[in-house]
Image 1: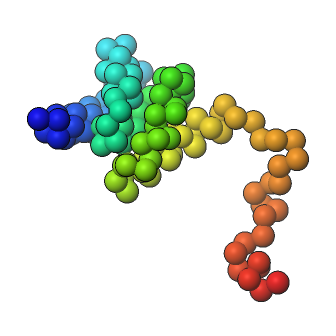
Image 2: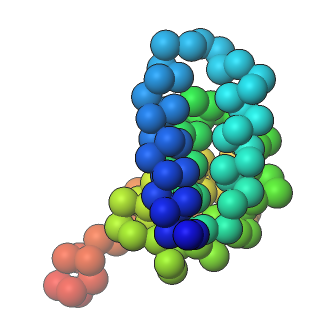
Length: 119
């Protein structure tokens, strides 16, 4: 049954993320498993894979290149936990790979909601 398999992958991925904290740097085998999980198209598995990525190899943005669009698409189907984790991973990736346009306004220059409502 696919739902049982997804739950098993999600649980196994989360457990692997916690265990990997003892292993700096991550072994090649763990990176291979993480890459396979990042390639899954199931939103629950991708959410768990995002959690594992943040714990195991948060600086290995190269692992995300081929999975970026699928992770964006998974945001609509993921639960709140998965959405938050996917957004964090996608933010890291986007910040590193997509430069700001030359005319972009710095975040500190954007007025807050309160200032816009008062004005």
